Structures are given as C-alpha cells and as structure tokens.
Length: 172
Length: 172
Image 1 (tube, rainbow over the protein chains, first blue to last red):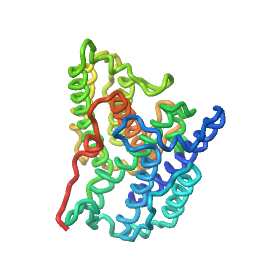
Image 2 (cartoon, chains in turn orange, cyan):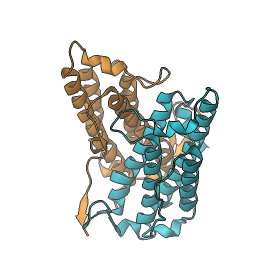
Image 3 (spheres, rainbow over the protein chains, first blue to last red):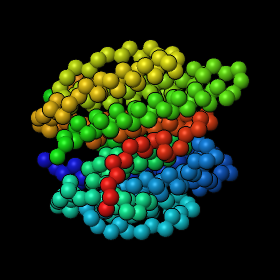
Image 4 (cartoon, helix red, strand yellow):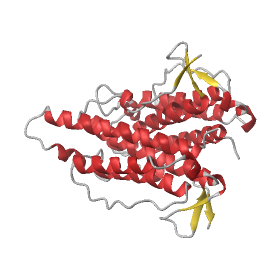
C-alpha cells in the first residue's frame, strides 16, 4: 500500500494545481471588467479581521510545504511572504508545487514513528499521523477553501468542479 | 498503526463537533441583534449560485456519513434534507456524529482492497484509498469551510481556533 504520507503530499500538490487554475479564472474575471487592476483581488477578504487572499494562498502553500518536509524529516525551503501581484503569488504556488514534486515514497519511510516538532509551540510536537490528520490537512484545506470563497464571493467564475479535480475512476 | 480509515472518520466527527460550536456562536450573534430571526442565517450564501448555509452543512454531513459507510461497506442512514431551523440542522449534525461514533476500527478491515461505488456515476467506483483522499476528504473540508466562510462573512465571531480543534500534543 502506498504510504499515506506520500499520497497526502501528492493530493496537496494536485489541489494547489487547482488553485493555480482559480488564479487564471481571477485574471479572466478582472480582464472582463474596466479600469480594474487584477492585483487588487489579492487584498480582498470576507471579514475585516480575516487574512486577505494573498495571505490565504501563502498559508496554504506553507501548510503543504511543511506537511511534506516535517513528515519526511527534511528542512523546508523558505519563502519570505513578499508577494504583491498575481504573477508573484502564482510563482510561489509553482515553487511549492515543484518542491512537493521532488518527494518520492521512500522519503516517508519511518514517518509513522516520527514525532514532528511544532514551530509555534516550542518544546511540543505531535506524532506524524496525528499531525497530518489533526493539523496539516484541515489547515491546508481551510486556507485553500478561504482563497476559493474569497474569489467566489468576488464574482470569479468558480464552482465545485474547480475544487475536486482528479478522480481515479474504475469500472465496477 | 491505527487504520487511516478509522482515524479519518474520527477526525470528521471532531470537525463536525467544531461546526456545532459555530452554530452556537451564530445563535449568540443573532441574539446580539434586534428583530432578527436567527434561522435566516441558514439562507445566507457568498454568491447567488452557491449552496446556502443549510445545504453546505447537509453536504458536509453527507460527505462524512458516506465516507464512513462506503469504506466500511455498510449502508448509510438516510437524511431527507428538510432542515429549516438552526435546531433542526443541529439535530442533523448530532445524528451524523452519533452514527460516526458507532464505528470501531475493525469495521474498516479490508477497506484498502475495496472499490467504493459512486452513487452519482453509475458503473464507476474508486479504490477506497483514492476515494478518501481525492474525494471524501476534500469534499468534506470544502463544505465545512464554506459553512465557516458564510458565517464569518455574516459577522459571527469565529476564528481559526474554531476550525482546528483537538491537537494530540506531545513533549519533544
């Protein structure tokens, strides 16, 4: 059976690929309007005390990157969160997807017995399995969903088909 | 190692428990305003062609229920989608949580070699592992996140701490 850690990382990579498509739809939407800088979309949010779109995408990228790195016991590449344009945030997503794409199944050998440190809680960690299920996965989907929700609310042409992408169908 | 199917179902149960808390916050929010029927919240949405809040919660409940039932090869209980009030949708969430709570690890024995049928695609199915990762999990988090986003946008007092709940911390 394929390592669940490896499959989780592959799935996050695929979902970030879907998110790249949402950014293309956002650009198309912006072009259909007049006098409107598409990069303004990155400052949109659903509530004043919520992360803006750009920060939601950065957080989704980080959730995926750290999930892979921590469960495989590697150091994640750094990204300074300085994106200001759609092109720059698209480059961030691509950079993280390229990083996720470097992982092979063998990188996760022994992950199930690993305790993963939490950078925001010094001295504490979680069993890798708990970390993926209770934190990395909900956190990742939370931020990609908020990015989706902000774009959807703005009027970008998105639907569920843009969120659930690859399905490995089989005949019954 | 605990079956990933069993842990996935437990995690969905826990997240639906968080969602119950959001409904309590929604009621508190409604009570803080004047002349406002709190059940109106169930008809809110972020875009005219998006599911309203009540349907997002029904869909999240179904995603969790079918994930458990299909991977354990059982028949899921039916829910007719007739909720009109916060009390009724809270009862739906509790009913599904009670159902998820009946599963034990042994129910998922052999799941990894099971092909799960897809009710919306006759004649087609997915390997249980692909189904959980590519469909049930993203679909579940999509709908709970949209419920969260609608309430957040409405002004209900929610933050990330209401979404990521239990973390099984360990000392390093």
